Length: 114
Figure (tube, rainbow, N blue to C red):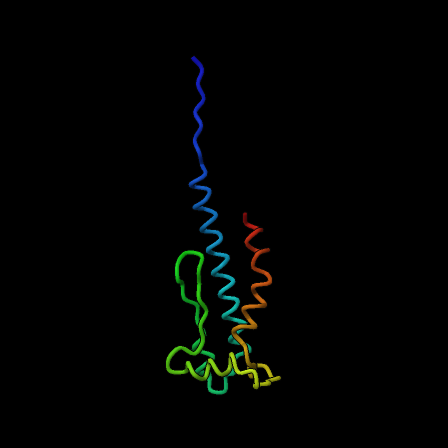
């Protein structure tokens, strides 16, 4: 009698790729954090030091700036269309613009590991 045994390695392959994608997404979030800290208004450093990355769930990270007690100031810096800063560290929309810059590279980095 001749027989063939087939073992699927798909579950372990999927777990491995999920871990790799999570690492890439964490790296992208870290890059957004780094870029934001460079361009966010930092007269006293309070808002700048509030920029952080939090893990929400696997492959999902949140970059925030100005959590309590600076939330109103951070929102004004991010969304006020009347602000017009031209010096480094004095930029409106720092978090959103940093996210856009990094997002343009995201799919290429994820595709590279798949």
